[in-house]
Image 1 (cartoon, rainbow, N blue to C red):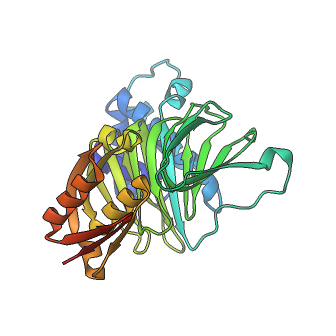
Image 2: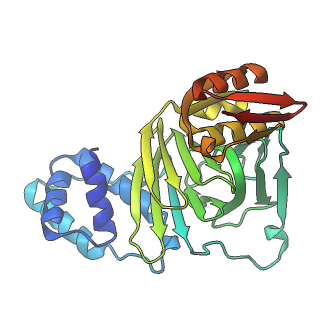
Length: 328
């Protein structure tokens, strides 16, 4: 599906679509039964996020218009819309709300008692959640989850980076809370990188269709759709987003100590190496932090990684025990 139609469906859902664009959308839906399926599927993705808005969206009037248009332009076809099949399509909604406290503390009861897994620097872990979803937690990261998930949702709280392989449950969405970010999943595999001290959040999709909804206080929602091998980066300070085609398998392979950086800052790279190998890496000149680098390491010895970074950035470094200092 072209980006144009994702945008039109999103505008239709939020009732901001113009009459002209509604006509374009109607004609597109009516032109091919597959388009109607895609339309419904995107609506399912958007619908999973509506709990994060102040009020639910009433779609009946607009949908009636589209249905009427379809009926006028083709012979009736007796078929059931495959909701069950489409519900099985992996989908994810990411909602970013700056200045909005979207996570509410629950009253204490046995179901809401949280387990907490914390990985120190230099340590990764993997484990199975109560719903059989699998989590790979990176070094320097923390995940909290209840001993028993609620009947209507599966909520976990993440600080840092984790790869999730979520077991599909249509009626029990999987929600990842990462500070200002809430990620709602029906079932898919993806990576979330959201370290509190870093200014960027990255969502990388390995399998499934993903809808990323950006919600800033007093501003309309902005939606991005991601497919496998796409990554969305969000600047948490400015709210700017950047979507790229990437090799998701490589990005998510940090689990095997493979590191891939696309136009990443030197600060991000050194922070990643420090967390992974339990090091203290400093930049003598603060201006060095913004230097951009594209490189990759595959179980590369630490000394070799440091030498490579020095060459790529035109810098030098000193090493004393576990402390490394880069300088110009």
